[in-house]
Image 1 (cartoon, rainbow, N blue to C red):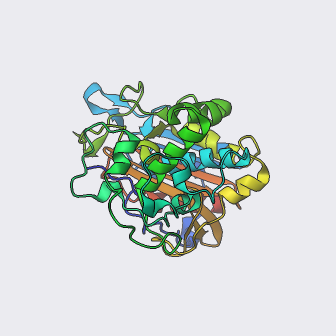
Image 2: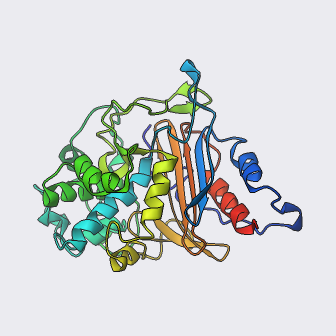
Image 3: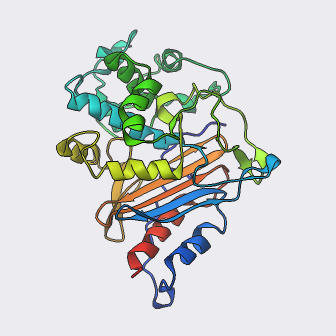
Length: 350
C-alpha cells in the first residue's frame, strides 16, 4: 500500500518535545543521541548544529539478505519529503519570473478540467485546491506505471471538495500537478530540472528521482525484515518519488541558510505559511513543509511514508539545528518524537 503523507505516522503527529528534567543532563551528546536513535530505528540518522554534524550513523540493516548494514551514505526513498524539493523548483521558477504562484494551474497543463481554472499554483503548494487525492481512490494502483497526465486524469472528474483557498486538505495530486507545471515551464523533465537546479549545484550526488534502478538504495521492509510491496516510482512522481541520504539532506538544509538557490527574500517566502490551519495542530503549511513551534523554538518539518520507508526531516532555524531520520522500515517508531527529542538534547547540551 502506497502512503505519501505529511508525517510517517500520520500528519497530525508532530509531537513537541517535553521539557528536560534535571536528571536528563547531557554528559555526552553523541552517546545520548546514539542511545536515543539507535534503540529502534533501522535506517540512518543525522543531527547537526550550526552547520557542524554532531551525529551521523547508519543503524541496522540496509539489506538483511546480503547482511549489508546501513550507513550515512545509504540511499533511502523520501516519500513526501519530496514535496519541499518540488516546491523549491517552483520557487526558483518564480524568482526567475517564469511563473507566478497566482497563475492558474490550467495555464501550465493540457486537458485541464473547467472546474480547475480557478485553482492556482499557490493553492496546490498549500493543499487548499480542493482537488481529490489520487492515492485515496478505491481503484488506486501503486504497482502499475503511470504518466503524470494519467494520474491526474483519474481524479479530473471528481468535483472539488472545497472552494479553492477555503481550507487545507492534504492531497498528493496537487504536487503531481506542480511537477507537470515545472516540466512545462522549464522545458525539462522533472528529474532533470531538479538535478540541474538543485542537486547538482548543491553537490547532492546521492539524491535524485528514482527510476527503478538506483544503486545504493536500501531494501524497503514493511516490518521486521519482510520486504515491502513493490511500487512503480512513476506513481508518486513529484509528490514522493525522490531518494537521498542523511548527508545530502544536511547539505540541502545548510544551503537554505544561504542564497545559493534563490534570493533571501524568496527563501523567506519559501518558509512562510501559505495556510495557517492544517491537519497538524498549531502548524501552518508553507512550500512543501509544516511550520510551527516546538517548546518555544520554531520548527519546520515534514515526513514521508512510502512502501518500505518512513522519513522525517526537521529544521530548527532559530537554533540552527537539523535532524534527519530515514528508515527503510515502514513500521518505524514515531520519527517525529525521536526528532524532537534529539533536538532537545542538542539544545540542552553545553
